[in-house]
Image (cartoon, rainbow, N blue to C red; front, side, top):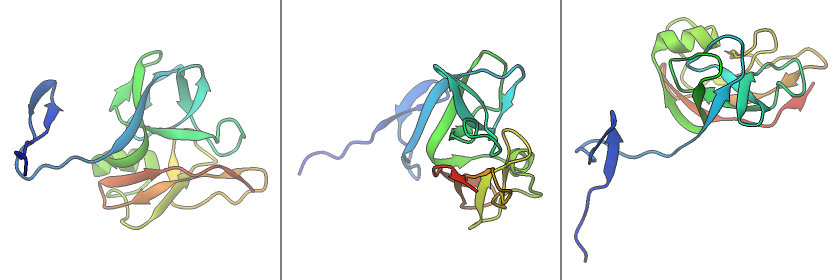
Length: 157
């Protein structure tokens, strides 16, 4: 049997060995430019608005309902690059999740969240029901602070 080796990881811009008790988890992400006139915040739900650009998604229009992911950065000013989580586990504070999903005290474990059809960039624990809007499942809460991003295709209501 060969030697066991610990993988190298990047922590706060420094390369180090994976520490005891830490583990690697897979997250898919892309870096895209904020095409909004204002800022994007952590957890904002986005769609691809142009070549390499994103805007806040909303479930009341076909193009804007084609969600690609959630913003990982705390704040991204207009025309700056945003890290967008397209699939995988995303961790934030209960306050950050409250701001995006309209919750109080964070997410509710086991609850499925959907793209809002009333406020761009936001999510909700209730699927839209208005005819002509779209139901877009964003993922499921694992705890009050962790969310499994697993975006489904928009369903026209």
